[in-house]
Length: 93
Image 1 (spheres, one colour):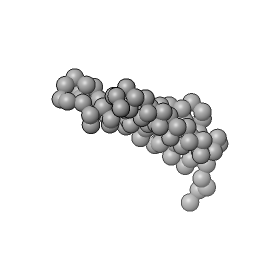
Image 2: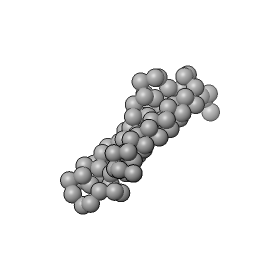
Image 3: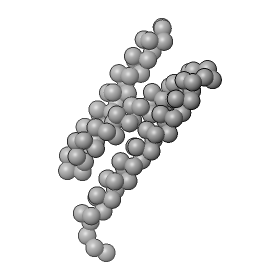
């Protein structure tokens, strides 16, 4: 199998996984925009991991590591915002 076919397979798999993860979240917890952004960042994380693991040391690895760092920050930030939003709905202790 060629590299393009493997990349296409990983892209479809990541898109399906992202869709399934977003689909399981109740709409009252996330706005569609935040969910979509987290899913796209998750796909970026999977793609960056693939790029870093397969490529020889070059500009591709540097860009892959940079994409991995930024996408991970975006995903973690999205979950932190969600956690903070959910804490506003909780009762007082």
